[in-house]
Length: 190
Ligand SMILES: [Zn+2]
Image 1: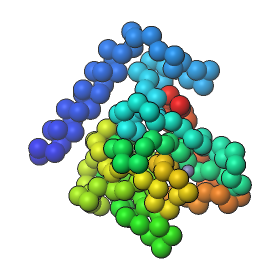
Image 2: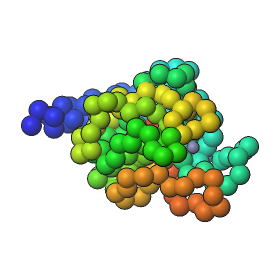
Image 3: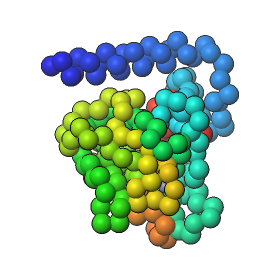
Image 4: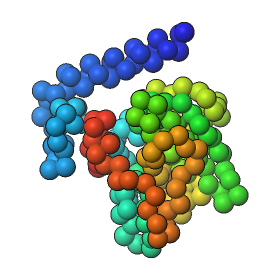
């Protein structure tokens, strides 16, 4: 299958880049990094979501500062229309352009890690379909503010096969802290 070969090639390329980058000094080592995670090349989540400079984390996991309740994901913001890319590969489980609340959803399940990454508020690519295979770094949408007060992408890591995000802003935290998961994938939480 052409798609599978392409995916494997990309995975090898990513791994190769990771190995090469080990020798490159980065400011990414933090107290939270342990074991194998510290051997993986580090990119900032706020860079990798777009593969462009200029993104920034505006609210961390369970890190609302001006909103009440719990925050089930990490908010990352860049200019409207910026390309939004998959932080890890997987299979699309849900694409919602805009629901009754104006909320958009892109959910991608990774069977290797048994995790679903849910991206909210972006404008999904018109070509995105359920069951489509997505590679790490592949463009899945563009930065927007669908169902949000401002332009950003909410990135949420959920355990198992999911199609929707957990409810943020209520008093219950449904998702585990994703920071170690992201570090183990080679990302700095910044
Ligand atoms: Zn959020």
